[in-house]
Image (tube, rainbow, N blue to C red):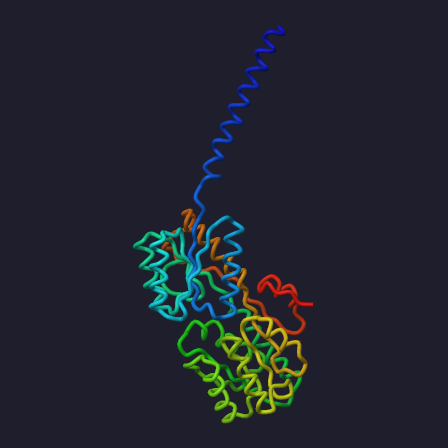
Length: 333
């Protein structure tokens, strides 16, 4: 009986070793598999938001064990095309790109389709492919409403005259930023006057010159918003030089959520009081996750899918400390 028991135990032990060996062999391909290579084309690396997006992109690639390659289009469609050709020649597994314009987005899609590389577009919408964008319409509508309400609280007897500065070349910003902000202002005050200014040149000097002309011709302006924080901050500088730029004369809204905006918003003497905070980390992580879904065939490469990463309205009462730490890798006291 003992003899049979010993034989049985030897057999059971040998069988368990077979299973363990099989389990190890199944895991081996994962351990030796080539790491994913994901290309990321920035629209303009000189922008604070784009720089932070790059950091979060590379950080998350490291976190998941992928290789990230970052290139800069510098707002140039030809440079963008060269970057795409570069990544295609490297045979990357997927490409995430913020196209210079909606027109170039379609051309980029055709390029990667020929190369059989999945693409995720970032912010700029065009074509039938996966788009990861910031859900700004809700936030900017809320921001417009809060900006108007703050003015009415401070100056209940002064009619609202809102100036909205827009990027003439980018229709996306009008749909997602300017129009929702105006709708929010009108929700708070249906009688508010709106002055829209299209900027054809986004250089700081050109912005300041254009706004100086606008405020000189319309000194009654008391609300200000733009499609990017650097525009709003440039306008604040113009107002300061004119002896304005305080809550007694204007309330200013911007879009980004930078440390500089935080400092202005917390300054009681600054007219800059509300901003729509973008979330570079959320956008990058979401983009990479959907790029991997495309690589794995979990979603169709020519299936139009729009994924929104919600923006956040920020004022002096917001949790800036957590927001800046998470999205901008910045610690404040």
